[in-house]
Picture 1 (cartoon, rainbow, N blue to C red):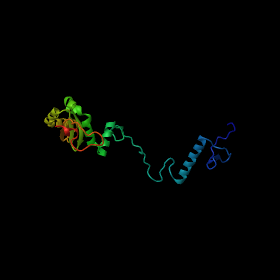
Picture 2 (cartoon, one colour):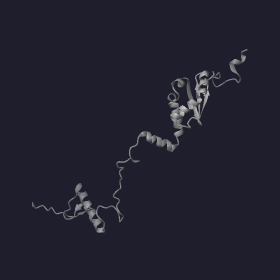
Picture 3 (cartoon, helix red, strand yellow):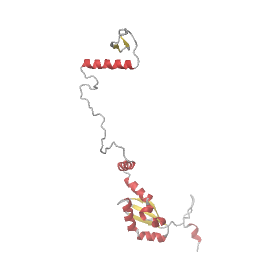
Picture 4 (spheres, rainbow, N blue to C red):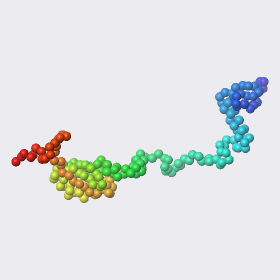
Length: 189
C-alpha cells in the first residue's frame, strides 16, 4: 500500500504512546487502547473480558421494570399519596374533623348552616353556636338527625355528640383592666 504501516502495535499506557514510534495517542484512540489493554489483562488473569465480577455470578436483572401491572414504583395520584401520608402520621382524625368545618353547609343543609356554625371539635364533641336562642332550641331538637348526617358525610365516630350554644351575650369587660363585680349594671334599680 502507500508505504504506510497499518499494523496495530501495543501501546504503553503509562506514557500514552506507541512503543516503536513514540507517537502520542489522543482522544478516542487513547480510550480504545486502554480498553484493549484492560481486556488483555483480564484474559491473562483468567476472567472473561467485559464481566465485572470477581468469581461471583453476574446479576443480569439489575434493574427491574414494573411491567404492565400496577406497582408501588408507578406514578401515584396525589390524593392516594396524601391519604397514605396522613395514615402513617396519624392525622386521619384531625383531617376528618377539618372536613366537618369545611363541608358544614353540605353536611347539615343550607338552612341550618345559615343560622349555625361549628366552633370547636374535641373528643367527638362538636360545639355549635346558633344565631338566636330559637335556632339553638331547634338545633337541640334536630341533634340526632344532624349527627346522622355528619356521620354519613365524613364517617362514623368523628362527631359523637353536639353541644349547642346560643348567641353570645354582650361582654362589658373591654380592655386589660376591669373592676370585679357586675360592671355598669350594678347601679340600676
